Image 1 (cartoon, rainbow, N blue to C red):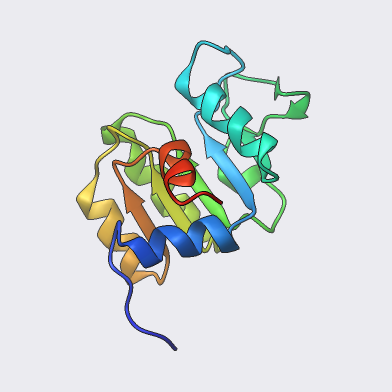
Image 2 (image 1 turned 180 degrees about the vertical axis):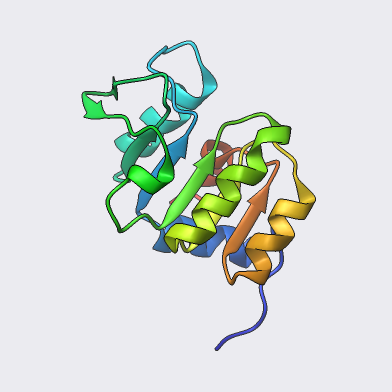
Length: 140
């Protein structure tokens, strides 16, 4: 095994952007005015497979929306979380349970205890960063 990666570290972010191509977006909205929709749309345009997870949606971008991570077929590599900070821990725990490689708590989503559980579970972790901004910064 390689070196231990830090939460939000450059190598962690690069690995997630390079290795995690199937992304469950928790809290993905069909409303184009919502940040989750804009970020997920960008992900799709850049070759990532986006799976909507939102119990209040039936489909987003023409794809079935799942009520929970547990309902999504196996193969999720990254769980990208667009939920309030006080609700993020449940999504992190679900990401660990389904065997995701990484969790990404979007800008403004902060739950250090949940992030630590994910690190302890062997996941790559990013907290309080925008996936789209980091993707652009690293020019993937």
